[in-house]
Image (cartoon, rainbow, N blue to C red):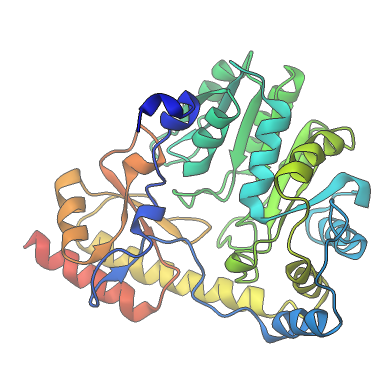
Length: 368
């Protein structure tokens, strides 16, 4: 089949370097490649979904999401982020990935510059390209944080700046001062900030600060996926100035119609019910981070300790990365996250401590 049957903007995008590793390795493989909580969805959330099915709540919902979920998300913003939203400013999506897609499609014209960190999450460049935009990486400093002054130099003339904190793949948490400076500078120059905050509850020593506190032209993207171990339920949302919602909703209506009805009722229980599972998961991730960090630095790797999310971005060299994967330690090569970190690998510590210890031991054996 001729390659010319396919759109150039699609052909130019590679398959996700993360998804390639989803089923990688044999029976003895240690998969540290997938950013998926290994915890089960809390019982009260699952019970809410079962109750919704039994009550026949299995049809289409309002395109923007069931009203009670949108209200619960507004209450969550007020309670956890100090932000005031109305339900009309919330759009429930099929995961945070769809929310990012809607924003790109609704805001980006052909040729518009879309900025994000390099290294950064794999979806940003691809979704910008699909929307006809020009993806552009903003480099990080030696501590894997955004260099605010260098970022400002690139912001002029951009359409969107994606600000991801806590960061994937780095685990870096940007300070309140950095977030404020970036948002205020971007908004002053007509650049919309898209704040990807899906890891907001997994911050260890610092404090998460929502970008929308510092500017009006900010769209916040979030999801139930990581916070409540609900990756497969596919429920996310965006919160934005009200005039953005109808334009994003157009894309959502034609591409998706609505997020899954049963998943929305499960998410409602997640946001309004018992929250004790969230800090419990966070503390377990903290323990795993400390174990893996001690193990890898003990082998001689030199890199900053992650401050959030459940990832570790480690400078290993491409040869050792390849050998580790061949030995069954499934990690994601840094090139999947941009052009500026080919010698790094992302480790996910969303897995049992035993697996982390085994992975360190296996890499140590390779180095010997």
